[in-house]
Length: 476
Image 1: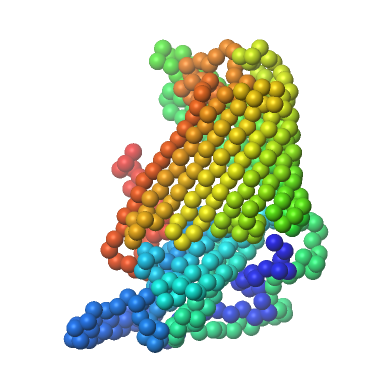
Image 2: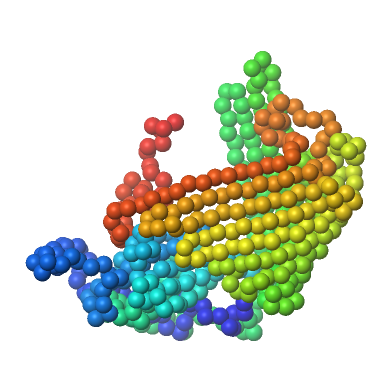
């Protein structure tokens, strides 16, 4: 998607910044007592009239002049900080169930070429506002801190909610404030690609490393990891190169007091190059080289040209996607130990076909993929994989979640003829022969009680998923 054609909202990206503040001018420390008294009076009047208080979504547009919209925020992934958004945008009612909302907000995101992230917010009206639809984008830079990214998302989210409130007939809950540009002139803004003078020519680089040491009387584990990546993304080309190196050493004392030691070094280099040839077609190639000790490969190199077709426009990928991709190419393997086929090295051609469908809608989200691959010299050496997950809102407050994957495996040409030791089996240091592998998880959640979710309380590290302090010692 080209920058020049996008409707992207950025905080501090326009000649003047527009902020939103509550229309209520009552001092903050006095609001709760006054709001409580006001609510008590409304309740007494309702009881006297013999009617029950109505929810916000049941109100007529004329009654909305003194009420606030109910918002259901639907987000899974990066920066879904409900606590932060409830604190920053306090002029709406945040509700726990979609059925209680006036507007349903779905936030999704995807990585940008420079290493940043683009957030997409879809606003969908409910009940009498069902025809309302709106969409806002916010792009966080790779150099943004978490707080800067959250500030930008909150600003864009606030703009979208204010637009809905104005369209749906809510009055007096927010007002615009113009912030003048600083002494340096106008503030930053979104520019087109033609205006950019980039000395890096859109290339982005990242390096990282980590290490850990842990142990006790009878064991010790050391791990050191390093990684790097280089990428460049334009509307026509996508290039990504990455590498990783891992060193690990494990020592265990057996029951007979002998010591088991496993020390290994793995590394890999991956490359992906994609070219957009049409609105729904892409071509490119993948490449992998590395040392994979768990799979008995001292060196491996694969090069697979590929083609992909997207049934929906690529711009809609964060909400819905249906793609089919095909890859074919050679793979060279140099084995650590002789394989069950009597090989120490070989080059084999492989091909694969994958179809993937994903959806993120008001009812929940789901994805399913099917992949089929085999060697060209022997089609019986193949793998078929099926993977799916779903999060489905069945009814008010009740959601069903399920994940499942299964593979039928018959292409393990790398298996060692010497087999595995008991330690390698128990610690999963070497891949064993198998005809299939599978995994399944499922669960449900049911929530009832108050429909509102406005209150924030961060005591003892609570709220927003923070870990509590001081209680871990009681549960060791």
